[in-house]
Amino acid sequence: MTDDGFREFVAARGPALSRMAYVVTGDHGLAEDLVQEALVKVAARWRKLAGRGDPEPYVRKVMINQLRTWRRPRRLTFVPAAVLPESPPSTDESARTDLKVALSRALTVLTVKQRIVLYLRFYEDLSESAVAAELGCSVGTVKRHTHDALERLRKVAPRLLEAEVRS
Image (cartoon, rainbow, N blue to C red; front, side, top):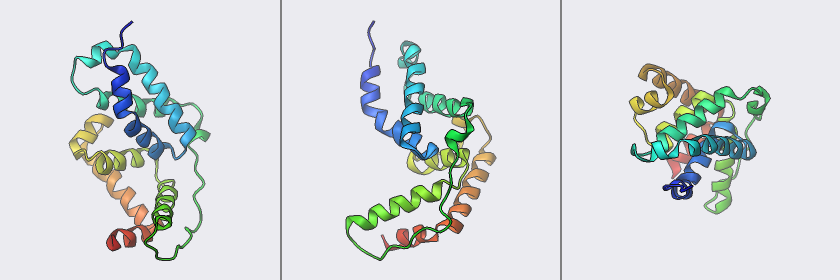
């Protein structure tokens, strides 16, 4: 059986899919499971997908649907820190690491759908209509999830905004 570019796709886009999975699950192990399960499903249909253009939106859709079907809600249960630790201003790598940890903790207070919307909008740089198409919802729903998520992040982790201003 020939893979018709499947291996190349996974090598090229696997890291991006893993990032998305980590952002929406908040856990490296769960992210690996999510990507693996999605790629197994996609591999079975790869020949059809390969001839239709870019398969990545389809893979992301499979990942999103897989999240919805996981029967174990505890898999996506987060316990956010009550207060994010303050870090001293610094220009070294530890400051960047502190910000990454703070962002990771802040994302845990969002719903899975809010994390998916933020990831697709701001990391993958998709338009609101493209995100709506991938999620199977209206543009208004995407706007509402984006607004609510950003508002929540502003309340939970205001220092992330301060870091952005300083950059």
